[in-house]
Amino acid sequence: MSGADAPQKAPQARPCPICGKPAVEKYRPFCSKRCADVDLNRWLSGAYAIPGAPEEDEDGESGPAER
Ligand SMILES: [Zn+2]
Image 1 (spheres, rainbow, N blue to C red):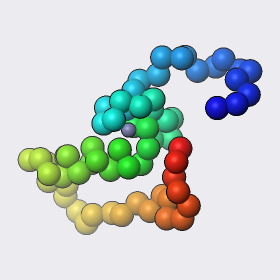
Image 2 (spheres, helix red, strand yellow; image 1 turned 90 degrees about the vertical axis):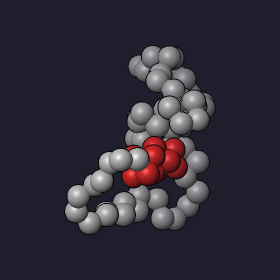
Image 3 (tube, protein in one colour; image 1 turned 180 degrees about the horizontal axis):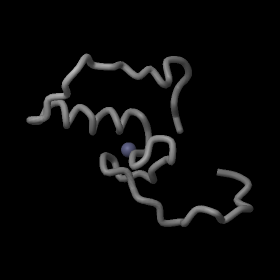
Image 4 (spheres, protein in one colour; image 1 turned 90 degrees about the horizontal axis):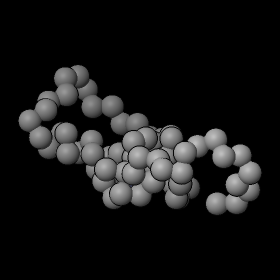
C-alpha cells in the first residue's frame, strides 16, 4: 500500500472469515473473490438449495486478481 494520506477507513476492518486476511470492500466481507467463492461453495455444499439456474459471475476472467 502506498499513499496513506487519507485515513478514511478504520484500521481495524473485518477480517475475511475464510482466510482471516483484511477484507476488501469489493468482495466484503471477504478478501477476494476466491474466498467469496469458497464461502459460496460452503453454502451450496450445505443444506441450502438455491432455486433457479446457477449464475456464473465472471467478474475477473482475465488478469490475476491479487487484490
Ligand atoms: Zn480471504
